[in-house]
Each structure stands twice: as C-alpha cells, then as structure tokens.
Length: 318
Ligand code: GLV
Image: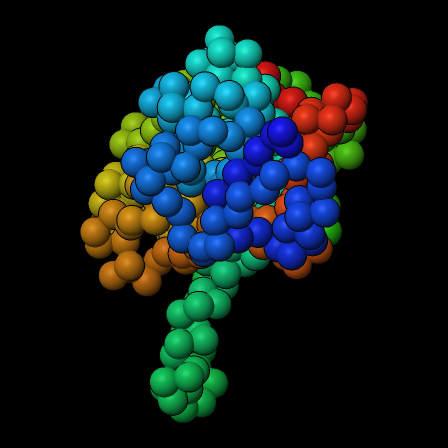
C-alpha cells in the first residue's frame, strides 16, 4: 500500500501538482485557514508524512497521535512551531525551506524600514482622504536613512542579505553575535555587544530565530536603552519582542517608531497596536513574492518526496 502524505493547507499550485503526480497517496486540506490543534491531530492518525505551515503546531500530542509518521516537512525556514527534540526522539525527520526566502525577507525588512522612516502608510491614507491641500514645510517629516547607524541582530542568511543592502546608503553597520566575515569585508561592519548595538543604532532590525534565549530579546530594558529617534523592525518572529512594552513605548513616543511583520500571538495583535500612527504593520509576508512562494512549495514537497523515496538532497533540521 502506498504511503500517505497529508498537506495541511492550500499551497501554490506547483507544489500541489508535484504532490498529486507522485506515487503516494495524498490527502490535501483545501483550506486557506489553519486547522485547530485538535482538528489537525485528528487528521494525522494514519499518515506517513506531514507537509505543514509555520502556524501548524506540531507538538508531542500531535506526534503521539501519528504512530506511522516518518517526516514533517515545514514550508518555512523557521521551525519553532515543531517540537523537533520530540520528533527526533521518535525517529521522525524534520525538514525546512531555507535560503530561497532570504532575499525577499530582507527586501521586506527594507520596505518596512522605508515605510516607517518616511511615513508611507500614513502619507498614503492622508492623501487618499483628500487632506493633501498643498505642499507644506512640516508635512509628514520622518527620519534620514543615509549615513545613519544600522543595527542588525542576527546575521544568518537573512540578516546578512539585509545588511548588505545598506551599501547604497553609506550607513555605519553594527551587528551582534558571531563574527561575520562577509559583513566585516563588504561593509566594514562592527561586531559589538548587543547593548552597544541597541544604544547606538538609529534602525534596529531583528533576524534571529525564535529560540528560548531570544524570547523577549527586546523588552523594557532594551527599549529604555534605545535612542528616542530610533526605529525597530521585526521580520523574524513575534515573541522576540515584548509586544505589550512595544505598545507602551510607542504610545509614550519613547522611540520614533516600529515596523512589524510578525506578532507575539499571531494572528492576534496586542490591543492598542493598531491605534498608533508610529507603527507599520504587515501580515507575516516576508517571503510573499510569487516566485519565492512557488519555490518554497516545491521545496517543501520535494523534501518530503525525497525522504519517502530514499533519495538524497532534502533540507533536514533533525
Ligand atoms: C517565515 O516566517 C518562514 O519562517 O519561512
């Protein structure tokens, strides 16, 4: 009997075609919304492979409900939604989709940086509402970008791509964590401790994975250290920022602004966040370009098929 693959959501057609043309039994949930944890658990009882999305919670309870499970293939680079240690203990292989989305996520971080510094969403609303009655010397004043200090927390693939894009803006680039020879060579970037980065940066962009040590990496203490003219950008994972504190400092105008693509309790937003003008909000769309999402879908399906077929080349996390 053919092994069974369950795909927990609609993904781009190219991925679905690849799956449907495989020799395996395929069960696709034709839904744009995630299943509840209980509903997801009830769908995995007899499956051998699960292709899932970053908001599907793959915990012990789910894994225990899937005794035949051999593979969990996440269509995302981040895999904090999966209990990888437990999967490993059950000999289940876990795959992700790194690399292809680095550039698009870095580009979104820059889009957010421009959007908040130059007040683009606010200006757009103002103009659409017919409030533009003539050029005004003090209208929509924002922050400079060229020559400013850019702080990059996390210089893996995405953080490095993001930092390299600062080249045209002649910025002083600070980064924390492990030495990054590419940034040192290309940008003469300075590897500093995190507190120095937070104190000295005009823009702080987050690119670390969500691990226990990164939970609330930016909280009350860090906001207090930031320049009052500084901006925070988060395209990594929501819980890296203490969102209640963020709302408080934005309300009090303790920092100049923030631009967020990810949220602490996604998709819920901390009350008060949407009332603020000094924040730009996007719906977790770092990798959301047509070519990138198509490639991610293919990669997530191929990771799964490769393992089931015993072929090499999959992207394994554990
Ligand atoms: C997106 O957030 C991803 O992890 O791929």
